[in-house]
Length: 388
Ligand code: ATP
Ligand code: MG
Image (tube, rainbow, N blue to C red):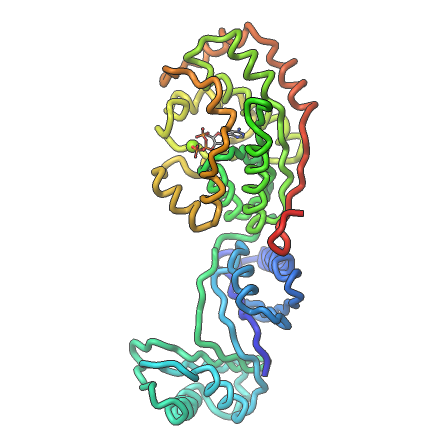
């Protein structure tokens, strides 16, 4: 008898000719997640098993964060004999109270008892060994599932996992990662649809501190537990902000700054083989995120811009940030470059032509070249709870 983790994948992407491609991608991601725990992965019909891990709780925690995994069950794997099934059934139901039923599924039809007979037999064994339980076949509190396959597997718990599609099957995108609450959630949501993530961050040293940068590295690290390793490109942004401050109208500063961010992200994304940009923008959240604001910042991009949070309220985004584990880091009080040189009355209805007019005072290409040449590439990955 050995404890294993049964890993279920979603149904949608398992259909059609792409099936082996998705399964291999998922297997790679699960292997990566369990590697620090020393486990091994076995593929079986439509599912996977993680075996040989000592710390099952940690294993569950890690595997439940792999996109493409829809649920897991800690299970006992036993030989296909009646005494072995009986022992495992007793063991699994030990200490439980309330109602239960046995749900046997016999994929191996050579097993001498059919499913109904197994249900009745193992139900009787459990009742005899645990007087605190009674049978309810309609709405049981506990369902003891018994699967007779290449071996026999028994489990009671079904734990929902993160869902989505395995990272790496949906291309690659560049996430504009600030130190705020929104952009890590945006990255999570796009990665959940199978997209590999790189990240870009604009840093205005000395106006923004080393701690502000480290906070973003930490956010990338937290995200990388779901997405796999991330290249974080840190762009020196001070010169651009100073030029804007010196030479452009005060009420346009934020939106002009956002256009520079988008231009640089677009250039770096293409260089790094990304097919889209991702931001944490949400319609109407702040002055630069009105419909006109989004049009003006998006107008400088050649790649599509994905804004997965566009229709979310701030409270909904905060709730998600808490669930994925980035919230506590996001609220650390280090200033972001957006908060320096913030105009008192930012324009909420910017016009592309007026912004282009203001940009004539600047050497746009020269500023971008200089910023891009100063990029620091920080490779972040999550292993054993530490960034390495
Ligand atoms: P919050 O709104 O929670 O303060 P935010 O990250 O959404 O944080 P906004 O000012 O709303 O900050 O910026 C909108 C989007 O622009 C962000 O979601 C992010 O994608 C991008 N962005 C803002 N500042 C930066 C930055 N310093 N580096 C990289 N991307 C940034
Ligand atoms: Mg925001």
